[in-house]
Length: 283
Image (tube, rainbow, N blue to C red; front, side, top):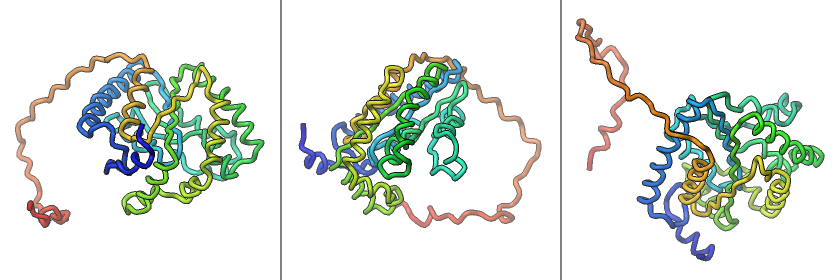
């Protein structure tokens, strides 16, 4: 197994970088195949009236966002949606903790991808002191019961924890800081996580003890190599759902009717977007 320093030095230019393992052509070919299967899964969910919840959790910069993007890339947003909840409002803070997540759960024929979830309380809220010790302990007691209720009601619940080493996380943070297109991803909370690595590790271990249940297990995705992590997670999700191929009718385009004399108004009457592309040339 390569040393961490070798791993980091081998980072390529895929987003914030991914340890070179799979060749890009191999990765893209398999990703497209898996995404085609995800579309089949989507059609099965819609046809069967199934409800699928996928929880994405893990360290900051572990690759959750990039994986969610690849999962949802070719799916129908009316069937599969991403739930990324903001900081709770003052009113939401007075509600039962799970209440604001419940309203985002899927109805029949829907998929919901949680970009972070109710597990905020077991991680960042606990480590950063945003909840009390009593609230944290109550969460650890209630969460397995809450998830058991979801599963017993027929919801397909899949929970993925994206694991990244401290050295690779720090390198990804450094790349974000240097890249103006990704700097927005680097929040004060991310920077704080660097100095609280062990506290987050202990919080995650305690969370697993209480919530890695038989009816709602955690699946760990090793994500120092982002390409492999994405393929591994998607392949596992597909293998864990008993979907079948749903035959869809091939749409037939209707013939265009004959013109009835319509003429488009003069373009001079409209305000056109300047042709910026033409100024670039083809050289």
